Length: 140
Image 1: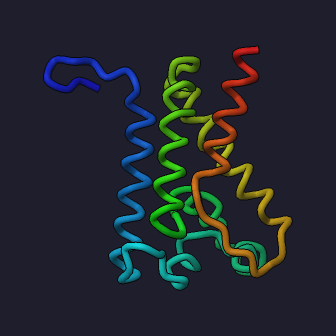
Image 2 (image 1 turned 90 degrees about the horizontal axis):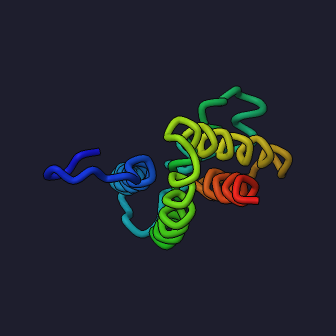
């Protein structure tokens, strides 16, 4: 990414943070509360195991990676995404980093299906920690 003639090396991490923040802004607006995501919004855009298993809302396995339960959840996840993502971008090519991030988030959400059917999950934690794990493995 070029900004005023300066090349920014860590464009994907910043882009992912911006997408997460934008999704939180949207879900806050739709739900009418900036501090906490409305339960109806979480049921629609987060991952509800029952909906995925019984009703086939498989897209929730992906969208849940970008939805956060409340403002502190978003802030902490984005803080750690910056730490782990910036490091991962030093180690991997852009497309490798993005694949690791999205595949890790999807894998985490698939594993969440092992929890009770009424479980609602949301957040970037699976993607983040998968990125962290891949970075550790690569460095060893």
